[in-house]
Amino acid sequence: MKSEQEPPGVIVLYNDTEDLIKGEARDLLAERGVIACAHAIADALAENGYRIVRLPFQEDVELALSPYPPDQWVIFNLGEGLSGRLFEEARIAYALEAMGYTFTGSDGSAHARCLNKAHAKKLLAAKNVQIPTGFLFRHPDEIKEMNGKLPFPLIVKPVAEGGSIGLDADAVVHTKRALSERVDYITSCYRQAALAESFIDGREFNIALWGNPPQVLPLAEIDFSAFSDPHERIVSFSAKWEEDSFEYQNTPVVCPAQVSSRLSQRITQTAKRAWDAMGCRGYARVDMRVSKNEIPYVVEVNCNPDLSPDAGFYRAARTAGFSYREMATSILEIARRQVYVEDRNSIGKRWTFNFGDNSEGRSFQFNGSKLRRRTMERV
Image (tube, rainbow, N blue to C red; front, side, top):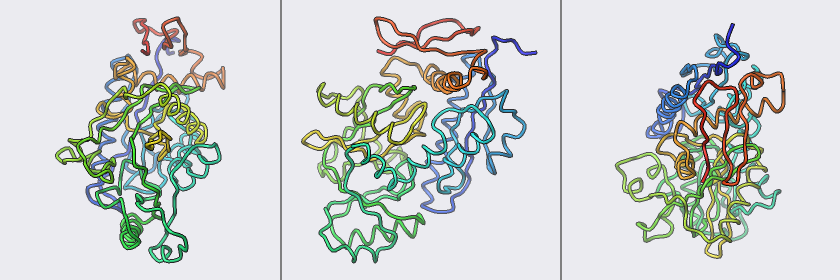
């Protein structure tokens, strides 16, 4: 019989993709990045005393999890699907729910809402969140049917991809001809509709949130000062994944961002409304552009952001005073605490995780753990 004080078994679940069914060959860089992130998370949790199983899957997630009963294992969910299939993140989360697992991050419905950028825009607008004007094109011929003047420049992206997939130097277009060519590229190469949005000439911020209710971690801003042309100031695929590229080497991130208290409040409130609109849970990242008159426009809500040691979410957590190990543990325990609140007979009753307040700020505290007690303070 297990000790009542023993930490739960944790499965770090991630996809192991060897090829893609659509897109560019280089898009595998993003897919392979998930594997490196999973190993970093597993190592961090193992250092904190958890029993860890690294579980890559190449077929159905249900088959991969069959040896691990849901009443004995908690899932650290990093699954993004296989071979670049659409909406696999949502399907994985739905499957985990149906099988009865406690797992990190958002549920399947939130994943589905975030992944469909066109649908997400409608939900954000309904919550009075500012969004760029957008148009959805399933075929280049639909551009000819637009009677009104399109608000060029536009940035064109696949409607259901993350990780800056499909974004390169040609993503920002200034004419109908260029728009038609870009829509043709997206629909033929990525086999999905193309979302064209008004290009917001301004600053770009990443906002990391976690907890229930969500806390906003220090704001981060992309430094585009190396780019003289404002229309080149985007976080392209190269900027995110290709380490030898000019874009990667010249888009440093400033965290905490240098903003006025007024703008900080606007960004923070916008991020929280976006979180609520999407129904996020556990942790997420909101990306926004801020116009020259300081209006924040949400361009994406990512409820499964990259948690790698060199990625944006950890950068914000580190600025807040958390080590990588503490960040990973906090995300896991946020998920377990959520179940504990909803079901007092859950596994969380045996090894609970609570929030505590003090005069210095919010802290995370463990109850019933054999681990050395300490406070993880957020500055």
